Image (cartoon, rainbow, N blue to C red):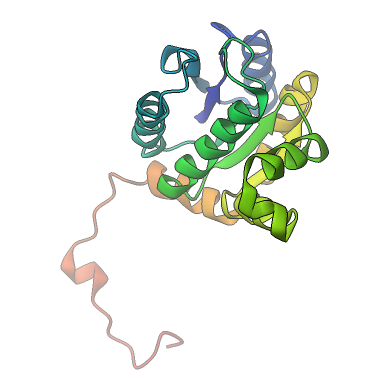
Length: 195
């Protein structure tokens, strides 16, 4: 099974059904897509408690096993400044990555060249060091790509073709989680592992 987490402020992202059908048809495995709507947490008044509640939900969901996480950076349904919403999207990616190192993280509805200057402008300490601090956050969050909204299905399909090694190991551990090894089978009897 392929597990996809979508974080988008639309009630039902229009690309989701088509993307899942395409992946199921191409890979011949079932797809489970879960949608989190940040607008259920963020009212628009800028309260930090709302952002904290959203991050708690992301942290809770991130502890599950996921193949791909796609996060919208244009949360248009939420009445906050664009740079603040971009910051929230990056914070979602960072929070997810702190709990889940295996899944592929993609941001969509924009591109990197438009987002970085807004993040630098928002963070006074980044202005001194240019884009270095923002780029470091992006790399540490393990964001695999910034894609246009109309390319989501193709990108997700393509990143699933060659998943990173950590995701492959995660899939194997999940698939074989019910296996048990008794003490006799795990005993090492050779002089070295080469024997």
